[in-house]
Image 1: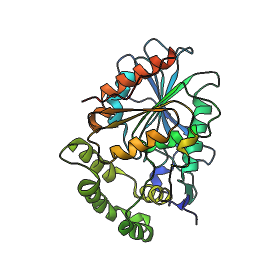
Image 2 (image 1 turned 60 degrees about the horizontal axis):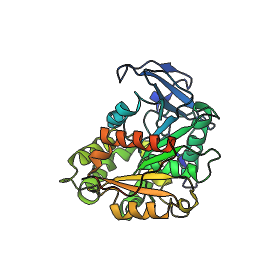
Image 3 (image 1 turned 30 degrees about the vertical axis):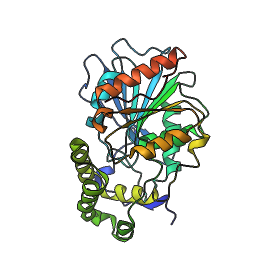
Image 4 (image 1 turned 45 degrees about the vertical axis):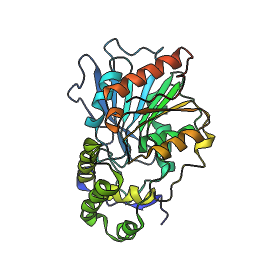
Length: 316
């Protein structure tokens, strides 16, 4: 079995209609919203939240397509969305490794990068009209998926703003073998080890306590079958051959004290993207705040007026 086709045993709570629709409690005053599950070509249905500003959907304005990080929940992005949604229509969608995705009645579901890229293509075709401008906003894994899409995209975005994209998703060698051997139903036993590894090795708990707490919660809430499948499918991914092919302008944003997405690696990613600029904010927390939302609005305004941010800006 290849690394991009991994076994996932279906759980009973995933057996839902892909066409179902609910009306969630409004998140932002005056902003209308709709929640749907959008079926992909392989039968997986992805949760999509569409926000429309109080002034209504203006076809002359771009749509923001927002792709969050792996297993990261909606509440993590509310500060940013609270800035974006009163101004622009936003299509926020959650990738297939998240608990919200509805999987078909089969044992094999694709969690490889090429399948994630196809999901971007399909969401765009179904949710953004062909003649409508769009902008991308993404974070971490979601940012990497967007870059993979941009390398092959038929339609160019107006602009793209990405928080800390990844060049790889390596699992430590001492954890890889147990991850392959342990059945999905027992994979929850690995979660304490993952939390320890993030807290002691990858994260600066003193500088970024909220980031550390957030990752502990995300690991706890992750569905174990999908967590295992996605982690193993991404083990061999490397983005270095893809990034130089991307000719679209990209604004790469990272936090100065974010050790999970190391600054040297983010600087290297920005350097190999042919038309990228790097903006360094003070912390990971700031990249998830209203300040980042304002940065996105500025970047879109500059793109709409055919202006570009001048140089790298360090925000302390």
